[in-house]
Length: 140
Image (tube, rainbow, N blue to C red; front, side, top):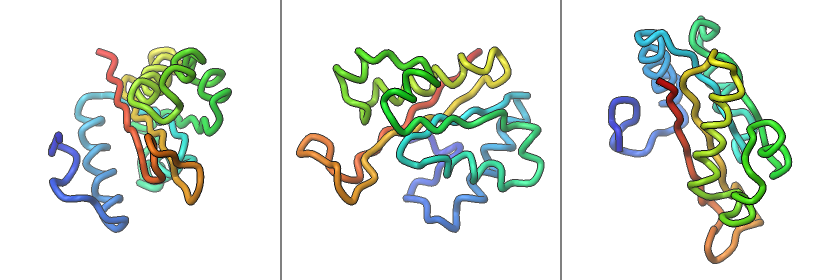
């Protein structure tokens, strides 16, 4: 686990503003903008980012792609990748993050993506409720 941004123990909801501030500081020091690509969180990450005053200096945009079709249309995730791995998978989280960076036409150099089974239903033996995959993409 990279402890540059994330604590060694699980974060609590009250920790989110401080974590976002650390991320913002790192992006600002590098002159980088962030894009988000969210499925199960439905825009909560983008919301946490834009809750921080001055976020327009480092936050570019957020995509909410709840359906498989939205992942393909908004982020360019290959439908065959989703079919082969399922929407809740490491390859799809990676493709979502890469697609978010690519769709900003060079404006955002960093993206975070999340896909998961939020519940309370919809889980399976392979991917139970609570399964979540995060993806990061950095261009340059």
